Length: 151
Image (cartoon, rainbow, N blue to C red):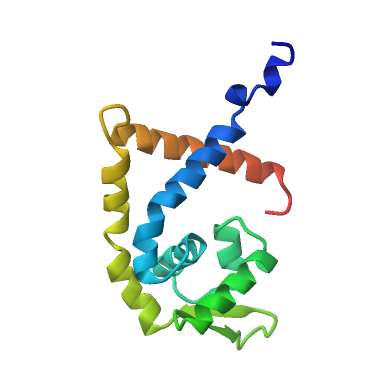
């Protein structure tokens, strides 16, 4: 085939994109039990690690723009999962904190990674392969972030 570089099977982006979509789909039944979406789950994981972060800090950790994350945070606030308050030291900053409900969801979500691993790890794909893949993708992310002045 002429233009071999344009074959879908020769692309890096397509398997990453497809794997992301399929993995996210694996999360869906677990997250439906919690009444949240995958992006909301990501926000919760950030806040479970460090509660009371600014919108900018959360967006930075999730490699998102603040205008992308703000509507998501508003929905989570209306669900009673978190609160958004102006910083007392800098009114331009909005601080996001977990409510008791948001903190309790951590206990309910604790088994999700193990459940997903059971569905993914098999004779063809071992736990070590998943760890290597994650580390390689994190290196790729670091390289791409370094090239992009917006992050």
